[in-house]
Image: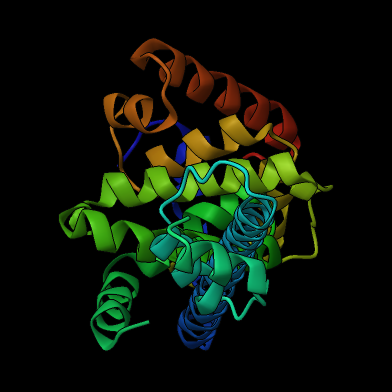
Length: 107
Length: 166
């Protein structure tokens, strides 16, 4: 027992105990918020992946189209033809007939 | 959240939940705000459970987490006026305490700055040493001791006219 009267008076009391349902309330809220965070993280990752895929598709499509045009105009062909053709086909791009003709003529 | 984490949280609440809540209610000066911060504390504990589950067995560590969350809440603007109507204190032994004194002490405690209120609770109700209080509150031992002394002096002044009452 302490000597100070104020300490003695304070020691007769204690901060109130938590309300009875607090445990379920806290753990329930944590479960909900954790699930929501996980959902947001998954959605964020999906959105990021779609964004990257979209940008990549745009770049590849642009590149394939440029290559096709260069070939059609009889210009240089820095990317090997089969690679370019495969890319263009994979993206469902229309390859001008001139490209096919150029290819059959050995580029 | 997996069942394993849920079990860990249940276990932590069973073992330390009451102490953490009491500490938060004193620090925040309100039971309602303490309930809000409890959620933040346990949300933080879920993340800690994934990285360092052993830490959840240390009372000092859990109190540190609770304190950090309380100060985050203060930073978000939760430092509102103390609510004297809040049933912050309870009588330990009805034979030794009275409702009027409980209300007086509660009012006096709520008029202390939170760091002094905190040290009073940790010392008197949690039986911590000044060294432990200093480590928890990240101040030197002497500072913890002087905060306690100042708090007692202020309480003495505030309660001087009620000295000797039961």
